[in-house]
Image 1 (cartoon, rainbow, N blue to C red):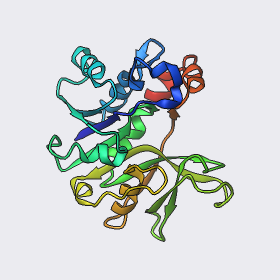
Image 2: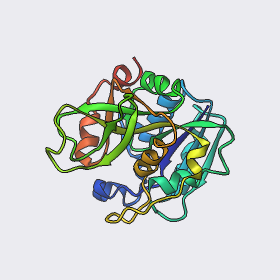
Image 3: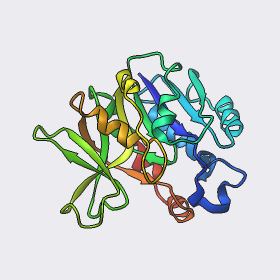
Image 4: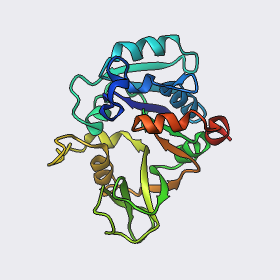
Length: 234
């Protein structure tokens, strides 16, 4: 199976930290975030695609030096048009029928990614009391994903909620779906693409044992003192 790491964004919430460094190369405990992502994917996939954009040359140099994946490819997202657009940029680089996709600026639990890889199609989730800052997973009667509601108003759904954590297992036919422009953010988002995909086939919801988004300098600072070897790989 192949893995796709979405690593093209600028990471504007990191403020000055990403002025000269792409967000996936910011260091957590001495390692670039990208290296943690590669290590988390390694048990589940044999080949990896890294979607680059902002300061992509630095990411290319990092991939050339890493020794986690010998089989990899770089895919350039020439315009920053959202995560759904970034995935579709991989159309000609993907060689298999199915793949895992993860955000390139989060830390994932490797065994949970392996469980996700064993589904025929699925999304990774965690529980939260408030879903207003996440994509809330709404289920159909069969317990599969019905759709993703991105950042709903606070209190719209009773807690606890299952929210999407930026990892999914998809098949190539997702790339044939039309991209829909988000009316406010003016981007083509992967969450909308996954919602549309869930209308075509059952999409399982797999709960993750650990997930840490690294959206802000405060998140990055907090990650420096965690026992990530245990949290991500045990």
